[in-house]
Amino acid sequence: MNMSKMRMPLGLNILSWVLRATAAAILIQTLFFKFTAAPESVYIFTKVGAEPWGRIGSGVVELIAAVLILTPRFTWLGSVLALGVMTGAILSHLTILGIEVQGDKGLLFALAVIVFVSSAANLVLHRNAIPLIGRRLARAPYCRWKYSRVCRKPWSQR
Image (cartoon, rainbow, N blue to C red; front, side):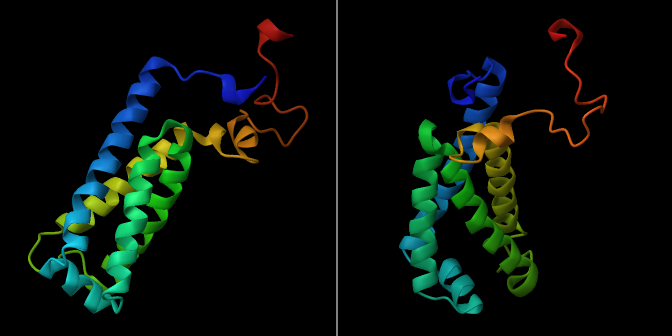
């Protein structure tokens, strides 16, 4: 069975678009602050030791990720990029910046977590589109033991 030709059920398709729109909206919204050198953004990247190139570079990667997330054929790649950038952001908050930055009550940290979770869920939904490994990831269930109950075919296919 060709997994790339399979259609996603309507409910999962709607969930996928909600996840994609959420992640892309947050990624695009934060670009304004990065590209205009907003004081909060400059403070964060100075404290991390990556000002100005880290701020601009992460903004460019976030822009690419947002565009790819909204592109059906490459949504998996946008999710991978967003996961990478948000992993860096979350780790920076946990190790260097702290959850709350300049009195934002943890808003930036929460947005990073939302993008991370949305991108991870979207990647799981579109795992079969990943080249080379997608078909293996989409197979269910994976069986180690030949006679495992989980690995047996349903009665209708015996």
